[in-house]
Amino acid sequence: MAPLLPSARIFYLYIATAFVFSVVTYLYFSMREEGARPEGISRGIVGYIFDPQIWFHKSAKQDYLYFFFNGLIYFGVVAQLLVSGHVFFEAFGAGLERVFGVRETAVFAPSLLTAIAYTLVVALATDLAVWITHYLQHKVTLLWQFHQVHHSAEVLTPATVYRMHPIDMLFTGIVGLALLALAFAGFSYLTASAPKDVTVMNVNVVVFAFYLLGYNLRHSHIWVSYPPWLSYILISPAQHQTHHSIDAKHYDKNFGLIFAFWDWLFGTLYVPKGYEKLEFGISREEPNPFNSITDIYLKPFAKAWALLAPNSIAGPLICLTIAIGAVFGGSLIL
Image (cartoon, rainbow, N blue to C red; front, side, top):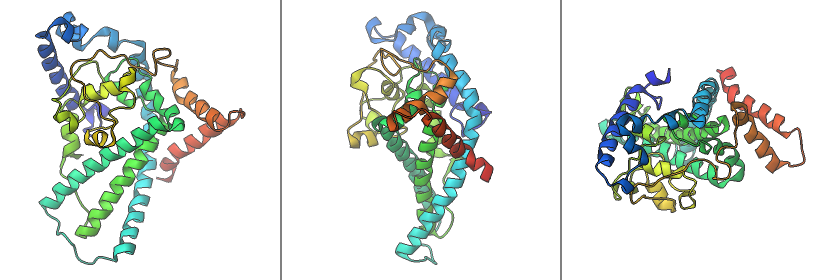
């Protein structure tokens, strides 16, 4: 279903435009000198874009299988977030009325201008939530045990974006929903009506444009970088690829999703000066510590519990039980 849903990151239209960018990239690099272009360029356009060593790599096959199983869990996560969103909105709305009083008239009448402003705020809130959670997932050792599932990919394909542990998805989703609820409550308070963003196919127009302009190349071997000045504003596919790199100079860089200025502001921005040959995974010694889908789901719990209670043997089962309840609890409520 995902390739047919505009809200899904692998919607067929986003994949199609990524393919166009791939062709343009191939043509660009094919005219460059040997040392300044990816090795795969010499295999021709088909060999470069559809390199079987990447698409049929063991890690890629793991991604495809994980995508299938994670799809079932994803609906439980979504259900929980729907419940959380209602709670956040009610809390923020009540807080605004408590601090500033009940508003009976609008400060700004709903208009195209307020819709455009809300559209931008939604995009910024979404991106800031990703930056905050992504930063914490790298810096907080407990959260890293779950986030390293995503970084254990040894090759990158569009399916790698779904290589996220359910705890990772839940954490990112709740923080994102909290900021979106705050934006919704704020605009509702100021305009005395439910705000609506500008959308294309029911997707925020800023997010839609981002997905359309080569988003799926972020998790790929196709090197697409932006001019240096633009790389301080928007995260290019190449910048996210360096985020996955195991080279020490790329560690904990480029946490942003759409916008690069969060990384610029907090000192985590890395702007490539040209094409860089990258290696992916957790480390060179052990790029992928997960040997199976079961490992991907359960091993992070064992590692997390080893940090919290190293002498307990029942911990992983307790953590797993709590996680299942958290993920699927929302679906039971709905």
